[in-house]
Length: 98
Image (cartoon, rainbow, N blue to C red; front, side, top):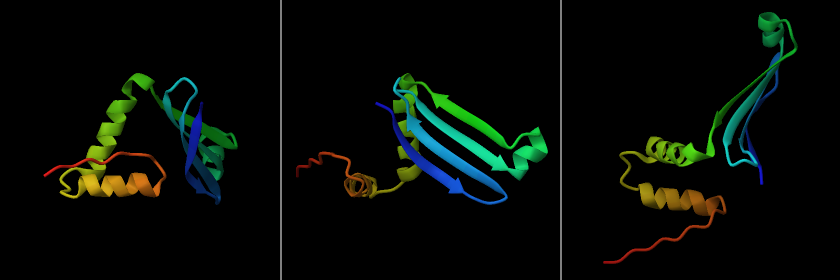
């Protein structure tokens, strides 16, 4: 099942819309659309559409890269990541022992 989140919706002389989506195929896709003055000026058309796709085989690489970018060098990484997941309603399990 496809899932989509909106990353950017900026309205103005040139409106910009950017989404991230897990496609039905399992691929990750970021897509955008610029509407208005800039595409008219550069392309002679009222809109410009673009997308970047990462195959489902490489989504885990993207996940680890983003976690490293967000939490690399952070000694509170586990607790902060746990809080992020919980506040977003994403189930997770935490275990510890001493």
